[in-house]
Amino acid sequence: MAVNIALAKGRIHKAVMKHLLQSGYEFPTYSDESRKLIFEDATGAVKVTLVKSPDVAVYVERGAADIGIVGEDVLLEEAAGAAVYEILDLGIGRCRMAVAGIAGKKIDFSRRITVGTKYPRIARKFFEENHHGVDIIKLNGSVELAPIVGLSDVIVDIVETGNTLRANGLEVLQYFMDFSARMICNPVSFKLKYDEIKKIVELVKEKDFEA
Ligand code: PRP
Image: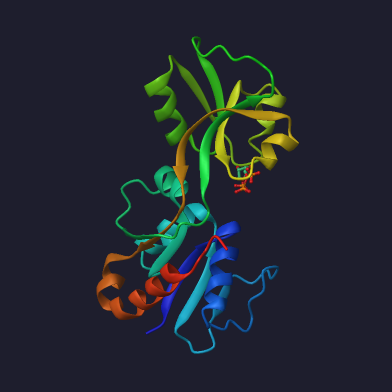
């Protein structure tokens, strides 16, 4: 039985595909730059689908994929309460959640502030626990623009290398959470395809993903 794997399109899928290839799987039609969204390995054991990161848990919960690999940040934001098992911390895709603002500009956190973010749930929780009041503006990308154009006082976003913040004249004011990529599994698949899934888990676990 083929194992269907949903990978979060972008950084995570590129890193995971690289290691599946190095582990001996062959995906004849895969390339990093391809626009194709489904790849089967040469033996028919593994089928990979590339999906938008918030959709990985949807695929896995509904059985459209047996396992999924996605950032923990996305799981916390989008998949709270999803009926999936988290079975592995891959230790890749490490990033931090941060509050960031325009470099050098002082922010008065004692007053109600406006926050632009792709992560309203995580941002709200952080500000409600640590500051007075907050207005959250949910954005879908290019979040760094929000303070520059006056849409928000600060942003809450993930920082990996910090390049995006620097390139846009922003700086981190506070880091408050660490994340990495997680493997999640459909509970029924976990029973029905246990051996096949275990093989993949062992394989990706053994790899030095940071290399
Ligand atoms: C994330 C995040 C930042 C960037 C941070 O966006 O929203 O924009 O990565 O990475 P860095 O610290 O290495 O520069 P992503 O590239 O995932 O794209 P998205 O906006 O489409 O979600």
